[in-house]
Length: 224
Image: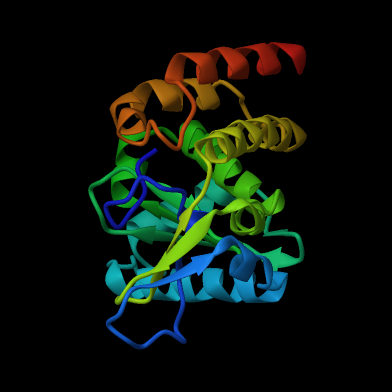
């Protein structure tokens, strides 16, 4: 699915480094990235979420769309990896969703309007998978380098094979999570059908759509 900020890379790989205050683009190599601690990577995720929340229009807690999301997430986990999950809605017509390692989970109004409740739960289960499996930390560890932009964003140059593998892992996690909470697994398939054209825009970070659907169907059948 296409992420926010007009980028197709994983949200967990689009992070903000507040310490960088110059207009000069800096590059961190693989060795420098390896020196970052898990705590620093979590902090980058937290800063990224805060930055995105300032950039986007957040629905107020009393907004009908936020109330609707609250109902959708009611059966889903309230925390993962000792991180409280914070589900919020952006008023943005582009269907999108993302999550960061600090528990930030965001969906757009466009996603809520294009998908039914079960399909939104499937999307959220997938995003929670990225947090639970610590994909952001793994992406930092595997990145060849990182470009620190003048707007304080870090764009990781990660292997295509890793980002695609992480999507499949998040899919498998979503199957198990939905089953654990007695939720319909069909939304994992139907949401892909509805968001197919957005998937194509992120083809270099996501597995082939047909192959991804086939893998999901096999795993869902195996879990029935």
